[in-house]
Image (cartoon, rainbow, N blue to C red; front, top):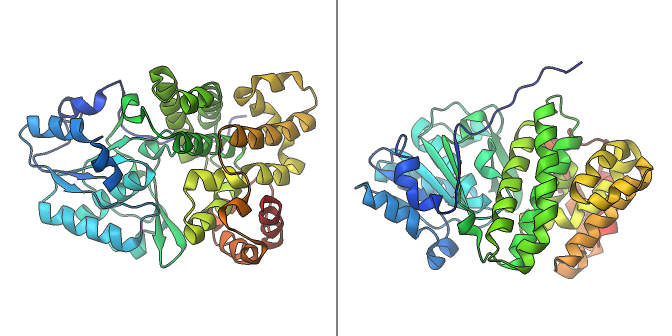
Amino acid sequence: MIEPFTFNTSQRIVFENGAAGKLDQTAGFCLGSRPFLVTDPGIVALGLHAQALDALTRADLDVGEFSDVVPDPPRALVEKAVEAAKSHGATSVVGFGGGSSLDVAKLVALLAQSNEDLDEAWGIDNAKGPRLPLILIPTTAGTGSEVTPISIITVGEEEKRGVVSPLLLPDLAVLDPLLTLGLPAAVTAATGIDAMVHAIEAYASRSANNNPVSRMLALEALRLLGANIETAVSTPQDEDARGSMLLGSMFAGMAFANSPVAAVHALAYPLGGTFHIAHGLSNALVLPHVLRFNNSVASATYAEIAPSLFPELSQVKSPQARADAFAEKLAELASKLGLQTRLSELGIGAQDVPKLARDAMKQTRLLVNNPREMTEADALEIYRSAL
């Protein structure tokens, strides 16, 4: 029997080489006369957004811009961006960049229109709306933020908080593989593994909304990501590999947007909040260790998905042995892609582990989805194994 479920995703998706340069055509239905672009200084320095800006100005639109987004964006930055959008009289918001820019754009679209208190919007389904029309254009193949109803913000010095609401799903997601050409190898690798984590955790999620659509998307995401990540890292101008990575990232995003992620993300967030390690790398550092922890209850599930990512594992007949090999292959993949694989390589020592474990326990909305219940003592051991 198929259990009841709900599946939400972005209203419209455009996938095309050069799509960013046609924004006036693809997004004309919702831009209004004064669109507001949210991006980061790196995008501006590289001129990646130039084609999108040209398309908007070609349509005689008055474009506002906020380009100060930083990784792990703090609340104060979001509030600054919201005020800038209001001052511009924004009629729509265009998020352009990595996950941080897209997360900020989501909240700008929400708060600039609804004027609601962010403190009342934290958590699941607490945002009230309405929001401004929203267009999201990713420049990395990892977060899947263009199809997720989630925005993660840093509050205070280190704590990560999320707003989760279908209101944050955009009116239009624009996937332009050409925007990801030449992305540095380390970023390609880390964001690619981030997308794999989304698919793995969505498939194995203990959420009541774990559903057949999410599982199907997760499997296809893993197939695309596994078949293309090494090429994308070693040959950064390969358009086919880049397009497959971007599509795989989006499928993984759709999957976990509806069947939420779990302990890998819960343990990754403190690494980003305290040590400012990029989110994709944070996930990669703890991924194999969390899988090994979960294997006592989730080996059959991991055995099901392992061949999608590593086809050679289909030859391993025992579910337990295949699940064990899956964790090992993921650890090997991170190393093969040139990523750091130990916390100690990033200056994290045994003295830091107790605080990391305490902070991970705050991520209750994620831990509840983990296949195996995790205590603070468990988190402590997992971090120690990753040192």
